[in-house]
Length: 366
Image (cartoon, rainbow, N blue to C red; front, side):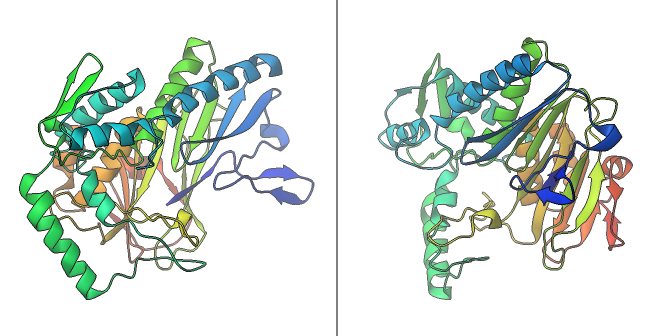
């Protein structure tokens, strides 16, 4: 599911100006008198920051500070790229060596370990080798699914069973002493997925608060983090549906309660489905295969980092016995969309979301 944020579409006369996946609308009587908006490009995706109620000079200074925060995380490396610090750490782990890491990566590892435990291992950043097995180059102009043959699937499954699943690499295998990180299993390969983007959202909002900013929104990938309001109105976030028959329609909207994050994690990221790009899947660490039945999970929580990890864990878990995972991770406002475009919501999410389409819609049970 994709976001159509609040502020959606910049309206100029009768036209609409697109600004990527998420757009901003501040028009008519709802437009605050002082609005600062800027676009960023960090962590492998586009980002947007909106600050309301500050003079332009002060808002610009705050936005630049947040941009520097996000750029600090760029050196970690969002994927397995060889230039990133994450790649260097994974290489050291594979050689059973210790590496001194940055404060940002240390914090990310420690938070990932906490969320790994809370998710009962369903969110497992240490099992990055599984994700790596399912990467591939797209040879077509547009790709929507990987086209592995039966033979390749069997080969991958044998490798997963013989190497990865038997050793079960986990965040518990890591040891952090100061900023020195090592692992007792060389098969550990860290891959944080979208969690690093949630982490960036939380860091950015925390810095804005320190600078006295009271009303702001940061959008990064499929995550939104807000504080305060957009003038005399709450922030507004709309969901664009995915799935087989969902198209590009808005399926619902919510109004964040001030300091809050709204995050969606997809089982299969179609947003990078272009020729030559590498696809990434959410892989079930228990089986070694990509998640299939659930298309996306959306979570509302005060922490974008927690929301990202919880959405991933619930995507892997599916609808069966979901409350045990949700309760342990402290999340309660949840929406799942299946591959067949069936929408499921928890009771807490049902209280928050305003549905826009007359679609089949079921509660997550119990």
